[in-house]
Image 1 (cartoon, one colour):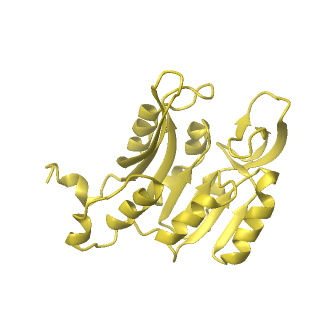
Image 2 (spheres, rainbow, N blue to C red):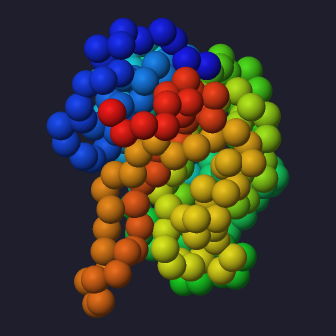
Image 3 (tube, rainbow, N blue to C red):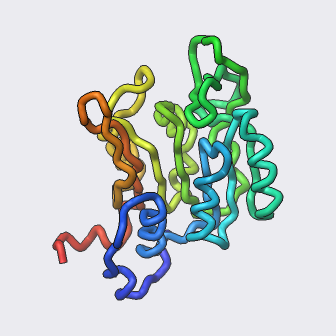
Length: 228
């Protein structure tokens, strides 16, 4: 899952935090995805950033919200290695309610609301069956990570790294809190290598969310347990 990287690259400092630096860190430790998977792609802005780091990869973007259709069509037209799946991702394929009130904060629903729409749902294993591994998978899915992982056993086994927006509060009933997410991905052979874009709740300053980067547990760097 990892390519050989010059020792000088592995030792280079990461000068800044943030998503761009985190993607650069993955490249620096040898993650070289053949396919980048963007779940919760919105208008494609995260994939555009990832393209700067992994320009040779194919990209599969999942986004069910009609509000982003035009932007995603334009993005795919400019980047021929990009394909768009107009579907949400869950534990099994079918149809689900989706809260479309916020174009950048939609989530699958079990009960209807005023902003509910019906969207198709697929699993990562089904949608990526013909895609070339290894995968880099990014989730920006607002509390349905448990369901997505339930439909991604094969995808996990074919992945080099995952990036997941993780939460310290139960933003959806039964959602994985960040330490539960770490434990769940550890069961599939992944460990955290970076945390970026940490957000705190304005009302009390407590930890709200962050993006956690996971690499396979067999990354050689994990065998080195000294600071230097």
